[in-house]
Figure 1: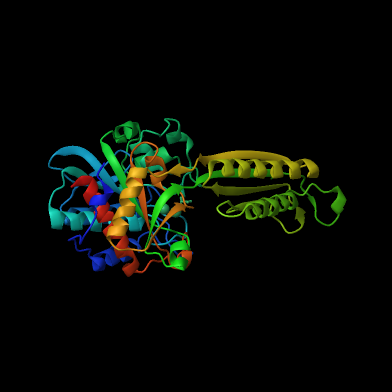
Figure 2: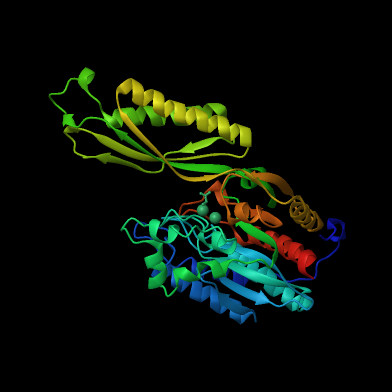
Amino acid sequence: MPDPADLTGQFPIDVDAATIQRHIDELGAIGEHPEGGLYRALYTPSWETGMALVESWLAEIGLETRRDAVGNLFGRLAGTESDRVVLTGSHIDTVKQGGKYDGALGIHAAIAAVGALKTAFGHPRTTLEVYVICEEEGSRFHSDFWGSRALLGRIAPDEVESLTDADGVTIGQAMRERGFDPAGIPSAQRADVEAFVELHIEQGRILNDEGYDVGVVDTITGQRHYRVRVSGQQDHAGTTPMDLRRDAVAGAAEMIERITSAAAGIGRPAVATIGTLAVSPGAVNIVPGACTFSIDTRHSDVAGRRALLRTIESILREVADRRGLGLDLEQLTDHEPVPMTPAIRDLVEASARAEGLRYLVMPSGAGHDSQLMAQHLPTGMIFVPSRDGRSHTPAEHTEIERVVPGVRVLARTLHRLAY
Ligand code: HGY
Ligand code: MN
Ligand code: MN
């Protein structure tokens, strides 16, 4: 691994801010959600349009492009001495009513950095590839990290037919509709990747509020998603006395209030979010017999996360028992906190220092492909500030003059890894 100490002095590359901004705006216009913001979901027409647009940009800067069996896109700048590969990039999919920067900015930054390195230094010793990840969010199927799990050989065979979207379409059907063959998924696994560096917006407000130029990520938070089904007794809203009810919504409300208060009581970085809630049968004059809600809960410390999960599950059970309610607790996803690779983290930090930037070594409260990649190969992340800390909303924004320093740090880091 290169010595971070070599990262000194003026770094002779030009980052094309105008092209980055144009890319942000052009990709940011693809996949508009009817209620505002973006929704570029895996294997949808807008996802395909976005992929094709990015592929044209990769070709424009002279990279060889390739799609793998699940639709990941790669732009290759061949190495002169080695076929081992340094990857850089991020995900092209978005959440519902998402913004133009989550994931996408890591793609734009990778294109700008690799393009600038190619112009200034020509071909690297070790192959450099822009990695346009087909899906990270899990916003259509609960498939999260589908692209990187394919690259790492971590897709279970049964997922192709078990993962379905809200319309009951399986991920396998969706793949075939886009011209991808699920039987080819094992061929997407790669053993030639030497390192992965991902630039991403912070999606929080620390860099923005405390005036830092970039973040050097040291750990990515652990997260767990639950689906909670509470069942009570459907009754008449007028004739059923309060003391005789088994009201699923009243029970869910107490659970939700106590879970969010418990996370707040534990304090940062513990979080718990109820992002979806459905009531059945859902009529103004019926005591609800059923209520289903989701829990997204996160903590960046292993022991802290374990205690938070224990607290959440004990609240759910205590409320259900006392109120005579049924409780079905389904775990949808579960990821332990993951440290970034120290050697890559140090390289990112040295690049930020060499650029004369004000940087912060910090955890990520959001999940990223880097948390999977780091479990298999040297991986690091660079954050750029999010205006007002906003993300997963159309209000997501980062001024271009706050993007460029991050791209320069990315370019320096890639240069030390591949040239
Ligand atoms: O939820 C997350 O942290 C990521 O955006 N998937
Ligand atoms: Mn996201
Ligand atoms: Mn993201």
